[in-house]
Length: 318
Length: 267
Image (tube, rainbow over all chains, first blue to last red):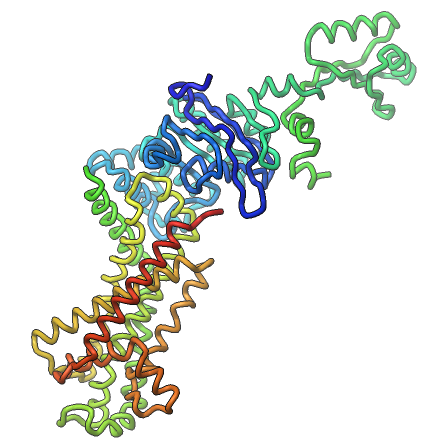
């Protein structure tokens, strides 16, 4: 089933404990080449641990793991030559300039003088760092630091890139710039393994998403598949009188009623058949709705439905 | 390219990186060189007149108390310079290990050893430069070594070996430290050891317990070897002892550092 040529990342039965604490419990992942894979989960779910294992930083306790066709245990250097990693902590040299940092990467990738120079200036331009190239990184903003970090990851032309929460802590503009950069990489055919606690980020960027909770994958699929699979979608009917609401509620017995706002929520799978059925039933009792909207669940609903609890942000917000 | 030539290329790259960092962070080097110079001035000009008078037969004739003490003190100050310089090693190693950059290096197909090799080589260069500056100050103050060319070679050899040992020790301490602050403190005891040896006054003038410590701790044979080479007197057993200590410290520290480096980041 799993084919080494098709999948850039394959993990089967991945387990990891730190002391007594089981952090990853039998995780299976398969990331097709040239796709963006989003690993979604709240803080402490085990996302960073997966990245650290797949990028050869720490060993797994168990599991068959292959990255870019290389076995992680038997050929870690093979893996290293194919990957690039941008972690949560900016992996840049604060004391040196942006250009110094990129040149260091060129040297460590054995690019040679001429090729290295060219690659450095390409990346400085691509990531809008050319003006700041000769300034020490300690003077950079958070967004510039992340961009430099990603640029350093790209010096060696990796085929698989791990991005561990690439936009955490960035302002909305910095986030957009980063998303744009990630989309450009995906368009170049690079496989991207992305972790995030932002549901909209996974929704925006990823071809496939796995939801990780307490070290287990609790859901996996395309963002659309996940949304379809999860109940939570509904048709929202708004009425302009108590009488109309009352009549409609009698006809649509499974609807949830919100008296103050004169709203009924009818569970739906988002299909036209369901919508038609609801409208026909309204017609039969002779009630007109003032407004109708079809709401598909967003990944927040997905998360809530598959884990039974909200994301951390939700908990804090409530 | 073969694995060995990659190891050499990568180590050279890392050495260049660390030297560049030193030039970008000159205040650290200046502070570390400043410390032994302050002690040199303090001990020569404040205490030197009195201390030199007590050193009657220690050194060749023709020197007054103060310049006689300067001749006695300089080898101890040279070791203090090494001890101060390696604090910088611990700091820059800890800066690397506690920042994100080490994880980047570890996910790249580079020779594993090159990270530490780069630090050690850069620190060797930094330490030698510091010694040269401090020795220059001592000579400006009136230090007149009686060493011949062979003795100077011996001095260079002892300094290199001693620096190599302490740099590996500081590298291990930097790796073991959880923060840069800790790393800047843990090697500090090294700068005290010249005092608790024969760096500033002969161990024979100390009370019994301290004298025993002073006689048998590693800085003392190294100080005595340097002093003998610089003043052109008999080195005796001290050289063997000094070399044994240096090799022992270097080896133990290297093993400790390598262990810390490869078992790092289990979390």
